[in-house]
Image 1: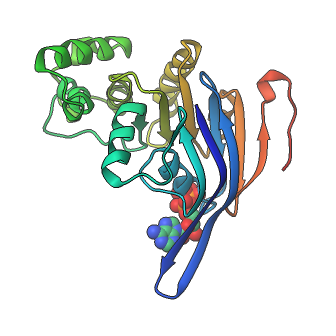
Image 2: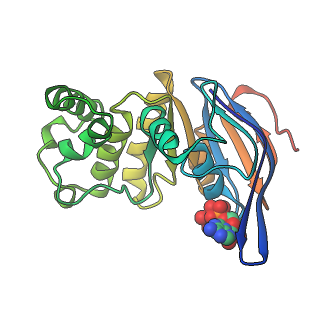
Image 3: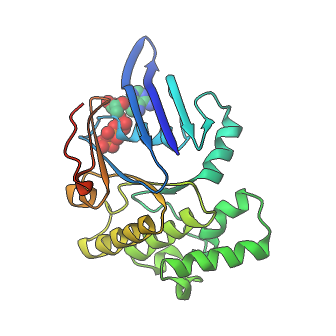
Length: 233
Ligand SMILES: Nc1ncnc2c1ncn2[C@@H]1O[C@H](COP(=O)(O)OP(=O)(O)OP(=O)(O)O)[C@@H](O)[C@H]1O
């Protein structure tokens, strides 16, 4: 599903070269639930941007569903992003003037789906996250937890290969965060592939597999819930 091989990322600013990711290797299988953890500045967002096709590696190979994306042009990257990846962000990133339903429809608009189909699919995605009755509400008329559920519906609506979540509970109180984590558990049990960045060890524990990154390198890749102990790298 996701295969990174010897991925490196270096930022260049003037004469300064900042190596941020070094020789990252990992494979995420279909249906896996992976948490990526690491201290601030360790390169998690940079890695997420690469996995999410928002950026390209400086060197190395990145394949999603057998497609090599490391060399793609911007337009092709945008297409892969739209069709293969569902994004969930810490701050929800909903458009404030649009209703919940219209927000959920957005990836379908970009994919060129007809209005009638968009509406049916968006309401179905909202039903899945328990918010069909809030479809006409704007984000400010919803709680933080409900806004994140709308964002999850938006991520699910075009049935992506991978759900990519960046600190999805980071802006929520404990109780709303719990509801969101239960929703991720449910999506995982349905067979969805989930890759999640988190600072919170309690959140990471729910994932099947934990990858820890430090100074741009993977230092641990373990599957505690499967009885496979820590594998320090
Ligand atoms: N566009 C850029 N140009 C130069 N350096 C950058 C750029 N983006 C990130 N960096 C540097 O890369 C390193 C890793 O940043 P990144 O945002 O990936 O870390 P992070 O683990 O996501 O941190 P946090 O948890 O604080 O969000 C940092 O030292 C940062 O200063």
